[in-house]
Length: 322
Image 1 (cartoon, helix red, strand yellow):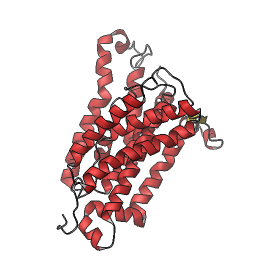
Image 2 (cartoon, one colour):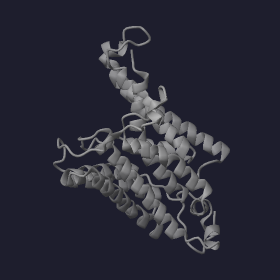
Image 3 (cartoon, helix red, strand yellow):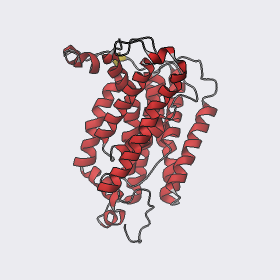
Image 4 (cartoon, helix red, strand yellow):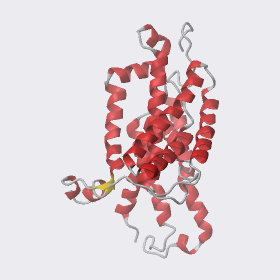
């Protein structure tokens, strides 16, 4: 039979990737900047982490390099959209191509190499809790635990702090925020950079933690786009985005288990004996993401919640606010 606890544990690990990327994008979009270059920044971060870890033998240096790499790449998007007021959708898509191209060029020759990886940890007391301890606090890589902490920190920052309030004000009505003394341009630059750093960390989570010792141009496999979809599905709420990321990770593991010989509901697994269904199984998580994206978008339009009012709209001092 399938191991339910292992499906949950795998969902926590792979969901952490989406958690970092989605929360980073939420922070960026809350300031009014839409960045569709998450996929490119993630792949660039994955390459940077892997290469730096390989060259130095130190995975922590690799993580730091990945974070900085993602942030620096995001500044190209910030410069084009904030300073030159270019179309944010076009710039974001271009950033994906740029990040992918840089990752392929700079990361040439890394495929097949091995490198240092993030260690697994067990939380002493919490791991003793029946079932919950074994699933959530036992022998998981350190970045999973950091992901646990990121969720409440991001929520508290966005909703309960003055910098978070300033960020939301810039995303809702930059002209009003400017009148109150908030530097709109600096705020948008800062949180675009923060989102890029988070995307770089998400990519690093793949190459040196969740799938350690492996890097190629297929490392991210479209997960950056899933993160963007989670932002809309969650109505720009970091807690909902994290839950969506974990659920997506569990679903991916579940579809992989369906391709094995394990019994399914006490019967012979038809997916294992009919390999024509494998392609359908691989499609299911992404198809459900599209459904969730469409549902989330329509709900946001109906209820007018979540999406910043000035998202994707360039700001020029002196013009009337939206």
